[in-house]
Length: 331
Image (cartoon, rainbow, N blue to C red; front, side, top):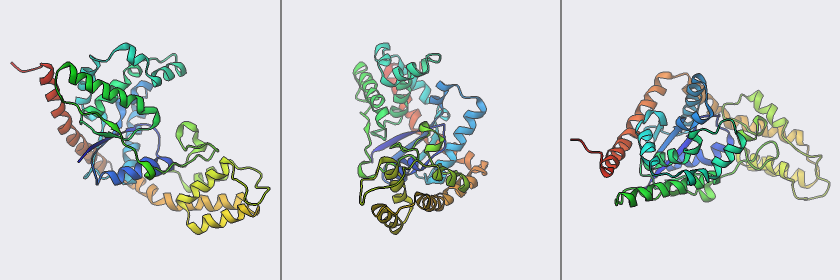
């Protein structure tokens, strides 16, 4: 059975794009692979969150992944900072990471350009910490987006460099886990091709959004003045609405509005009202679970403790063996 690891950002609520993209696949994968899912709170320190914000963000992400269907009894769901072995492996790998290769990292250069007043060491060594996250469990597969592929390549570099330096066939090479046709991309309400928090609040529908918020967001979704020719190609913003409708509405509903569009008889207001109600129908059970789990601090404490214990069992074995390979041995 292959080991799969995925990091979870410790900021931001989950939206429909997250759910139909990665999360539905995570729920399936946890029954087919040895899965580790971690909330990356160490990584978030590069943005200097306040202690209150950091704690609340981690709690919210933990709650929402549990509500979405990650089973802590089957998968290992843990908080990164609950596993101090990650920090030690980060240190040990960092001793063999070179300034030039870190400075050439695309994401570091982009961050440095966007935030010139906060070019901290954590940003520079981010790929080393990500490599530690992956290699600590000797993961074979890592679900990553395009923006993280270079970091995954660097994790392979650091693992292979360790193997060569210490003449040990120890770390496996991790590769990207490709969801293929199982990956559903949910577009944004603002006309963009991707739903995401980075695109702005009006772009995304969050799993925890109240019905009134969902209705307001959908009614404000970008449209045009309507089709002027029979069966004309839908422009991107309109195609987006239909693509969202395809995952939350019935086939008959989608067909109904598609026919109206093709006959130039569509009223976007009616379509948006239907779409909003279908989204509410889909997200309501998830939102209720989020509220229920979020109020059960005892359960969240048990989940976090169990996840830390399971993750540390794997991580401590790796660090112990790495220390011995390097030459750290008791007298």
